[in-house]
Amino acid sequence: MFPMKRRATILDMVQQEKMMKLPILVERLGVSMETLRRDIAVLVEEGAVEKVYGGIKLKEEPLGESLIEQRLHHALPEKKQIATYCRSLIQEGDCIYLDSGSTTLQLAHLLQDVQRLTVVTNSLPIVMALMHTEIEVLLIGGKLRRSEQSITTYDFLFNFDQLTIHKAFICASGVSLEKGVSDYSLEEATTRKKMIEIATHTYLMVDHSKFERDVFVHIAPLSAFDTIITDEQLEDATYETYVDAGVSLHRAT
Image 1 (cartoon, rainbow, N blue to C red):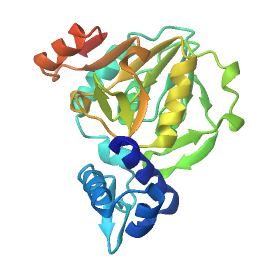
Image 2: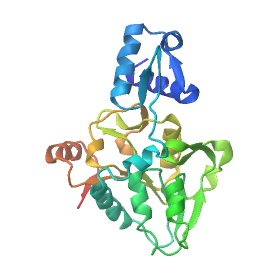
Image 3: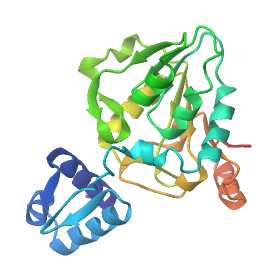
């Protein structure tokens, strides 16, 4: 098993059982303790887990604050730049998917004047942002993920085949030429993969800090997206590398 896949498996186990002892992880993964400790060091550095005596557990959130709430003010001007550009892609009568994320939430705040718009989402903050508008909102059914205030869906709870999504706006935690688009949560990735599959046009909304990062769960190759929208803070060298590789990349200003 490759290290990235192994770390995704470790994270999934911890999410399911809340705390895992190191000997149990060694047994389940079939790796040495030394290899496991290296994987855990990466997970700790990424802020996904924290060490406890003899094991690891999910990193605790500040009381009353979810992970998405912690991210709301990070790179806020850049997220607003990205959201403003994406708003220009949305037309009257569209049915769009808004992924759970702080950048897509900024886009939701710009949609009040769009006529006959339908928004499909798994984000509770986006639902609340659109609560008092005339926009038709479809909330995906499934399991509540408290840290992201999102719903991670399962096929038997939602009939995706009957959806016509004109445009899907997707968030992610990592973007790289070699590994594509990735995220921390296996369940969030499953939802995103399904929406990428059924949408007519798919857009990735990521600020400049997400580039050249590979995190735990693969979502899709860069070729799965019509355009990647980032902010003007993305370095010229990185921008040119991606464009030269044939990636449709736009820096919003």
